[in-house]
Length: 262
Image 1: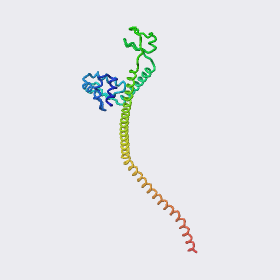
Image 2: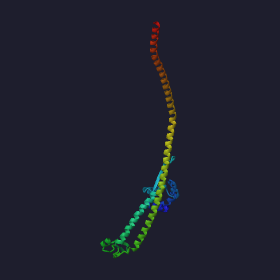
Image 3: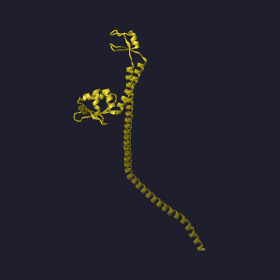
Image 4: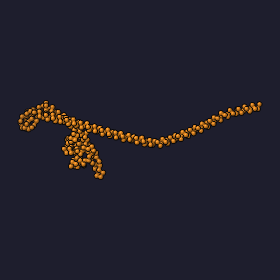
């Protein structure tokens, strides 16, 4: 069904010749325009004209690559399935509205016809011409719309069924697009995580030698500080002992000498 719908919309936009491109463009990859021209046995300019028409409606996308030797650009094309189906959807909706309006007008209004000239007029225009044909002079007759109404109603049912099927294909394509987006997001998240991990690893590898140097310096400082504290505490103790002992010893010696003299 999808292929038929794509054929219908492509032929509607780019002409009958573009119908053969669908088999070549069925892959999700971009295809060289020279290859398409070769397969269809037409010129590259003709292929480009068809693609440009489709591109105006967003039905195809393209990328270009420069030929290193020759210097010109080669275009690669791909059918945008979802946008093509959405365009077909909108065309079918317009057709359905037009058919419904025609059915209403045929059911309500009266139409007149000249059978000899096959000219059809509504009641107002027929009245302006006095219900006579300007071409042959025959009198207009009321047209029986029953056959035309049956055809219009059949056409309406066909278009409504087709619209339903197209909507189903649109939903399928939307699901595919969403899945692709989710895959792309997951890949991007993985890449981001890997980059973060690499940055962290690089930081850690740089921080290790720096930390070692800092630890060594701090350890040396601590040792120096502790040694300085010990030396300063020892000097303080010695000084305190001298100050305490000397004044006590001297008066005792003097007292003892005085007693011995007596």
